[in-house]
Amino acid sequence: MSTIPVVTSGSGTAELVQGLERLQGPVTVIRRCSELSELIAACQSGMARAAIVDDDAGELTASLADRVAAAGVALVVLADDPAARSRLDQLGVRHASRNLESTALAELVAGAVQAMGSRRPESGTASSLADPADGLRRWELTGEASPDREARQGPGSLVAVWGTAGGPGRTTLALNLAAEAAAAGSKVLLVDADTYAPSIAAVLGLADESAGLAQACRLAEQGLLEPAALAATAAEVQLKNRRLRVLTGITRSDRWLEIRGTALARVLEQARSIADITVVDCGFSVEADEELSFDTMAPRRNAATLVALEAADTVYAVGAADPVGVPRLVRALAELETAVPSASPLVVLNKVRRSTVGRSPERQLSEAWERFGPGRISAFLPADWDAADASLLAGAALLEAAPSSALRAAIAALANVPAGGSPKRRRRRAAATK
Image 1 (cartoon, rainbow, N blue to C red):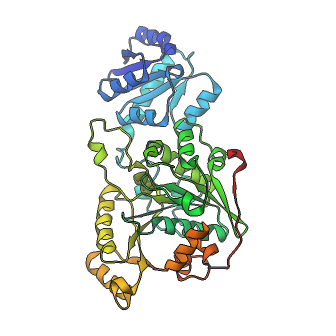
Image 2: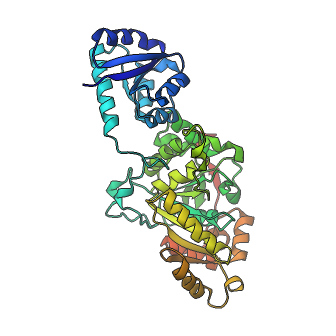
Image 3: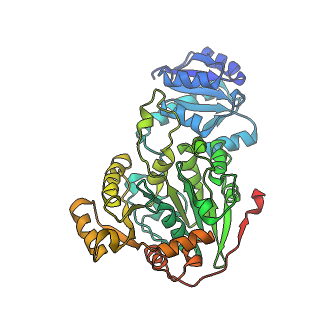
């Protein structure tokens, strides 16, 4: 067996290191690091194939574990505290007792290195949460099971609402798809993952300064995110005696660093276990230019969007139905195909009106799309300004503010749920967040 160079960090590793050295086997300690940052640098330099870290070396987060894995280094953590071991299990990190015999530790390290070598290459755009090969790209808001549902992690489905820059109506569609599904009886979680202009809280009139998604990502980073904890971070909105859970977005644009891709992937994975349907309002940009910086593992502002698109069972691509919005959407879809090849977006043209397209706007838009756009248009949403304004003024979904509107009817049809009446609604925070 070839030599396995190992780097270590933490006071608890000293005795074990001596034991490994006495074995004179393939596992060889080449460097002892005083801090985790030094260990990360050693891993990224390519000098090591495994890292042994004592739990007292510092806070081991999901992002840190991913940086080690991205460097092709197998990670083993020494921990005896039950809470620490449980947290490491949540992070998916191998761990062992500090009292483990040197021979057993060497075997554990060798096994971890072998498992690391057998992993398939990552896509580099998002997380490994979604498997592009599972073929599960179609999804209905009714929550009906797909034949491929077993291929997903957790029982719930996930939909990402994405689109171009310029306000094509991503948030309007995401909110009202979620509201229609919740009113129809599904357990729904609405997630505001837009790292540029989050607006779900403002649109619903929720005075939330805590940024529920940032809280959930923080717990995920620490390995403390469980279904109950995720549910506790969400605000609740009542619709037709049903509840819609909402993970509000960041409160300032400079807080985007709190929504790291690694953490969001774990949040979305847990979301499948607490909701039949998770609807994610995404940002517009899928550019990966940040990855060209010196530190290729630096936080990326667009990582949240890329992770959500990769993980989604269905992607809705929203564009404005006008001479500016349509070509913009065509270009954006080409960028999406490059950034997230596994996505098979359903095209939705919003704000459809004769004044910008001409007579028979749907027919003309369809003919233009056949010539220039990929695939076909899945839905046309009318430019119902009165309904949209009533929704904003009331801080409510269309099913409450404008239940008989043409826009509400079109979104309900897209969601595959019946459009009912107008219920009264009351908001309340989950008790655990107070």
